[in-house]
Image (tube, rainbow, N blue to C red; front, side):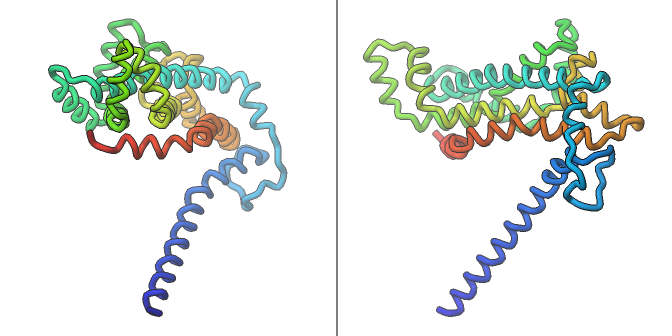
Length: 281
């Protein structure tokens, strides 16, 4: 009995030590970047973790510099990510609802196709998307990015949305149809209020993707004032003539603000949406 208690205590101690080390490894780089954004000068290296003097000039320079269009890039990214989140979430929920509630010809084929396409990384289709956008004269436009992000969302989220809708009893649909409700009314007035966890999960994933995407934005956007944050910051830091790392750190902090706020606000729904959508039906 004593040996079992000792074994459990040792196992628990090592578990906590591992979690503490993992937290330090995850939080230390983020803390270093945050403190570096308040450090005077341009170098990211410092002998001490805390700055000797806290300054806010880097945050001011982001919005006042004529060569660093941070405000424009921030607005472009926020616009693309928000609209992609709205339309992409709607597409995911509609596809998941249709696959869950309707039985139609080609349903199993559609499920298999979504599963197979989801196995391939998205950048494999970049050449085809580039040629298509070029033929439609949509290169260097934000509309092209919103369309691609929105209509590509069901590839990743339809199966989780379907699993979530499968957990909602079909008796609710039948009762609504007896009262004269059609499919749109059932989806809007019954399914959406009951699918808040799935709505939160889909909205969060559809916002984060466009917000941090670099590869597709770099390929489509050519004009400097139409760039997103990822493209603009990469261009600024990749040049050998620009070594203002503290300014880059301040930009990184501001980039993390919307995602952090979304995670904090939607955290209570996120785990429930993931676990409920993981069931098979």
